[in-house]
Picture 1 (cartoon, rainbow, N blue to C red):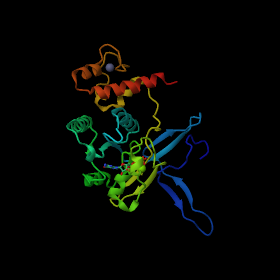
Picture 2: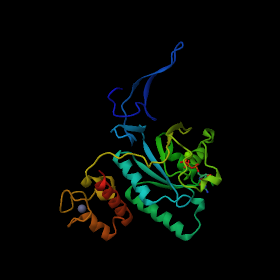
Picture 3: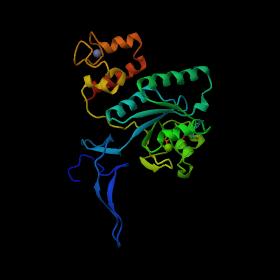
Picture 4: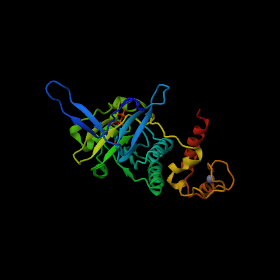
Length: 275
Ligand SMILES: Nc1nc2c(ncn2[C@@H]2O[C@H](COP(=O)(O)OP(=O)(O)OP(=O)(O)O)[C@@H](O)[C@H]2O)c(=O)[nH]1
Ligand SMILES: [Mg+2]
Ligand SMILES: [Zn+2]
């Protein structure tokens, strides 16, 4: 693997040819099959080498919560953009619905669900502790390799345990659960499920690296904007402040959500300021 641009030759989810241990010799990975897709984290040193977090992923599942901790739409959209960039189908699972008490919170949950389902991202409402809709969650994962992600404390490990108790993953203690940003799961690990699926539990996606793109290509990662590509006055329109912009027109009309559009701009402008 010399000359590899990756810091790790083998990643979670890789399919390999393996010769088992013989005599006193350790087993050997002989070959790694081509990956259908993979996600990377930028290596921390200044070299351009990347760290492959996981490979051969059928779908990415973002676990989101409205409170304890609150998942922002900025976080959800960044995750979805990453999935689009890597061509990984994404679904959104809202966990801890048992904690939803007010009508306002309930309305927020349903508005978010409608927003993302209209764009094409399936959503589920579950509770790991109250056993709500866990059968749907289980079916969603059945027979597939799923990458599970979300802020620390949203209940990723609790949800896996709820559908696969035998795994007995470590779950944050109640006293710790209210502190944001404490990662109980510290590296990507893959677990087999009885439904013939596999799950890759990752420690948050903060560090996921993005692929390289030009600013005017960025709207490709927003399916509801992608369809207006080439409909603006300028071919290289970034839908920021150019005149004759179809996307901005759709935002004003209300058919593209303002929250998605502002998160788009935030991400776009960060690209511009990136050295
Ligand atoms: N009320 C409620 N609490 C939950 C639910 N799911 C998980 N929790 C609690 O939330 C806390 C965090 O759960 P974990 O499963 O450890 O969260 P995690 O996403 O795996 O966190 P990291 O491994 O740090 O990324 C624990 O105290 C769980 O008991 C739920 O549906 N409802
Ligand atoms: Mg965990
Ligand atoms: Zn435009």
